[in-house]
Amino acid sequence: MTTQPISPRRTYLIGKARPNAIVGKNRETGEIALIVAGAFLGMISGLVVPVLMLRIIGLVGFPMLAFAAVYVPYRGRTFYRWFEISRSFRRTARNPATATWRTWAPEAGTRMSDGREVEIGPPPGIGRVTWLSAPFGPDEIAVLLHVDRRTVTAAIEIEGPGVGLRDSEDQEALVDRFGTLLKHVANGDGFVTRLQILARTLPADPDAHAKDVERRGDPSSPHWLQDSYDQLLSMVSTSSEQHRAYLVACMHYNRELAAEAQAVAKASRSSRDAGLAAVMARELTDICARLAEADIRVRQPLGQARLSSLVHSMYDPDHPIDHIQAMTRRNAWPAELDATHPQFLQAKTRESVTREPWCHATAWIKEWPLTPVGVNFLAPLLVHTPDVIRTVAVTMDLEPTDVAIERMLTEKTNDDADASRAAKMNKVVDPRDIAHTGRVDQRGEDLASGAAGVNLVGYITVSARTPDSLARDKRTIRASAGKSYLKLEWCDREHHRAFVNTLPFATGIRR
Image (cartoon, rainbow, N blue to C red):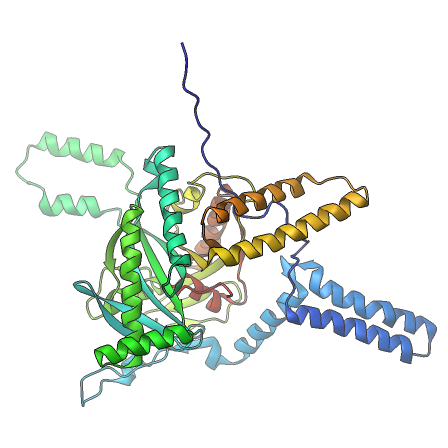
């Protein structure tokens, strides 16, 4: 009797096998300037100070303070990182006009000449946004022009392929097809350079089934049948959730995109902004065709009403996402916003059930899996965390294969140089270095086969009614993230800016 060999399931290693340093090897310009300033002050004190002891203290102390501010971990980050965050938060908290925001949509009124609503500005952290719309098949799609970020975004609602319901071979095939989509977007001639996946989870009405039975049931049915059904209903869990998934496409405004928008606008005899919206609709049409090949069904494009309802529901989860009546771009924002608390953001709408505002806290995924994981490694966070209102946003900044290969070769050259230096100094080989080298080689093979370069960033927003329940849900989410091999860091003192990264704007990653 012979048995067929079982091929091992493919695993993925997203994070690095070994961090480059305590906090990170890549340094910003400000950090380098702080180190240079510390060394300069130490040198000046060594030349100017006449007392020997003070001269030694200044010569050694200033550089040590600069290095400590840049490299030594402090509350999960460094003192250099916390300095600007704390300074901005104190400045925001001192000024009530910037710490608390209130919309003036009711007072803005409507123009009498054409009946259009008067435009109002978005809350702090959003930036200047211009709303447009473009035809998208039989429907329309909302296109947002983010002036401050110089990006153009649009969103569609998708229905995932249900990876957890398939066997391992089908799961790997689905992931490969999605990789083909990323490769096509990154290496194609289109203008989309960034994709964002939004997974919105809301608790469903636990009494929805009972209400449906009461409304549609037959009251003349036998009494024993009604009692039997009531007993069966009491034995079934009524805690359910609704999961909504969205795909956001982002184009960076550059000279080529401006020229294409101008050409489209000239052909259609419209404005340049309308040309940008038409280009985005064309790019999304191509992406939707690729999504069908990846077995990801497109449910509907988000027009201005649907996009406004989605954004509004993120500030106020009591608002149903599909309730689009009387939803305009001016109603997308909350009525009041309070960013004075360092550990959460408070938002309130006029249609809220109670007078208490909703509390929102956002965390960024500080560390992706450092060990090989399967396709469903995010299942504990996305599915197995009931009764927690959350939004998981993963933004993928795409780069062509050639650029990704050049970056990989640079990293491999640095790793080989470090290994050669360690061998000359007779250092013991760290197994994490070996794992990291193998991961770089595997990435090189994937890129050589045509895969796209993808830079990932993830954010998670948790919403709750009260600060106590929010703290409980944050602990639940942290435990679920640990099961998914993720490490989170809550964006304290900057939640009003971090919350924007879980909105359908494809933000949160530096280009």
